[in-house]
Image (cartoon, rainbow, N blue to C red; front, top):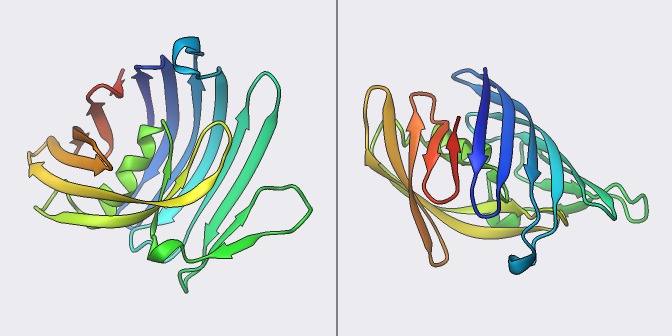
Length: 193
């Protein structure tokens, strides 16, 4: 299935081919972001390849980011023992290893595809729950990698749509997701077209 979202503030488009099953989620997508000089945001595009299993015992992410001046790449993979390998493809120091405070999920800044990972893994679109999580956060377009704390909690559950509250730092949003846990509407951020 291919999903496309129109982003706000800055204007963007995200499109991803998702292969969703009970045990796995694989995705191949692209994010195109317009410049916003007033906010100090330069135009960029990013492509990503994602693969995770439902238990989050293992996962991988490859991101390529391009601005007018530079191309960057980062590869992340999580082993079954919970160790993340981060490789920026520079060839100078090889991959860095970290457990990122036990993080099982990945989030790519500005890409709503990644909200599906914890929502699906925790079943928050099917059963009520609230979870504070350590999440591996990849920024765009510079591809820095660090851990952040995010909270996901069920607001309502429906047959076709559910609402899950997302919180990080001082930001909160009630995200509407479909029956697969994939974002339909992320208020103020992005909406599926």
